[in-house]
Image (tube, rainbow, N blue to C red; front, top):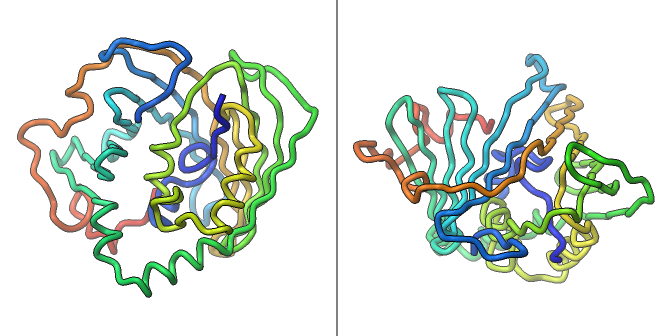
Length: 263
């Protein structure tokens, strides 16, 4: 079984991951219309001026694509396609969408700019400690790992991972964070060291508790997987609905990219 790296909604803020920056693999083959459904409860507290929050994210994986659906009726869904390197953001209320072509973005950046961002990302040092502590969380037997990340941001994580399921979402998480060998992080010794350390986590993360400092405030996030199952999924679920208009600049909902805060 492959070991999995943790990113994005599994313990790290998705908006932050994108800014800093092949479908699923199951132990048995499934039909094309069979997909993987993951339901996760995300909790956060400590953000200045905000009350503790709890929301449910629903992730669908099929046809070599991933869709992360927002539980907020006014929120934005995201579709990730590793084969093309395109992220699509859809706002159903506004009937609008916009895309980020990560490959095109990389090609359009100057080499000095890429080198500068890569150098910043390579400052992150990662350490993973496997513990002997185990417990059952929901339907899965889990082991506790202690993760420490230092650099641009200091993050301490408590990760409970299970080997009861065999899921590989690495192509999607790599694209979201641009942390893979073809992304901003590249394949440098520092990048390899980060990935090798995270590979010490055996299995899939069920519960991830992250503590960090952001804007002078202590912030804590918690992501807990509640459901993992296979179910039929129509191909249309992973496409922009007919009649939606594309925004060339900025996300759906009327704000420019500069005005929108990651959430």
